[in-house]
Length: 218
Image (tube, rainbow, N blue to C red; front, side):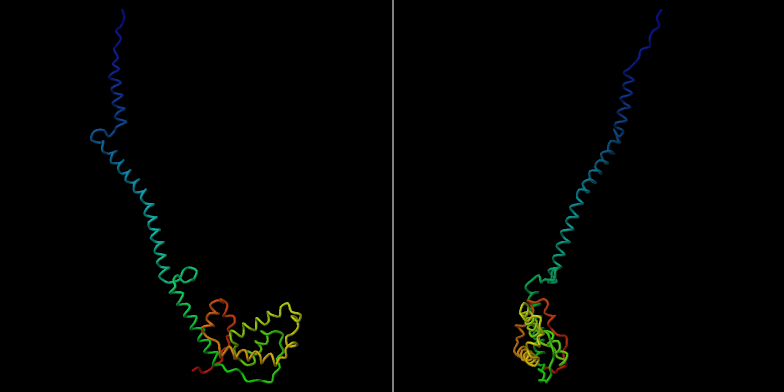
C-alpha cells in the first residue's frame, strides 16, 4: 500500500520569495516611496551646483582682470614704467624741459674762470677736463663733457693714438680751447635743445657734473 505523497504548493513558496524580493528591491514602496525620489532630487541639485561653480570662478577672474586694467589705466603708467596715455607722456616731457631749463639757467650764471698761467699735463681730453674741474672747482657743461669724450674717440685708430695729448697740443692752448667751448655752451645753449638731447640719451646724468658752486641767481 503506497503512502500518499504530500502535495507541494510551489505557488505559495514562489509567491513568498517574490514578495520578499520585491520588498528587498523596493523597500520604499507605498508610503516610503518618496524617500529615494527626494534623495535623487537632492543629488541632482547638488550636481547642478557643482557644475555652476566654475562659471562663478571664471567670472571673478575676468572681473579682477578688468579691475587691474582699470587700475593701471588710472595711474597713467603701466608695469614697465612707460606712459599709458599721451597725457602722461606730455607730463614727463614737460618735467624734463623744466629740468633742462633750470640746469641751463644755473650754468649760464657761473662765470668762466680768469686765465691762469698754469701748465697742466694731460694725456686725454677727458683727463684735462677732470683736472680743470679740480683746479677751478667748477663743473663743465653737459655738452662740453660730451664733446671731450668725442674728441678722445676721434683719436682711436690714428697714428698718434698712444701718444700723450700734451705732446701734440700745448697744455695752455688746450685749456684755452676748453674754456672757450665752455663759454659758448653756458651762454648760448637753449634749454629746449638740451631737453631734446636728454630725452634721447637715457644716460645723460653721467655727463652732468655733481660739483656746483654757490652762486646768486637772478
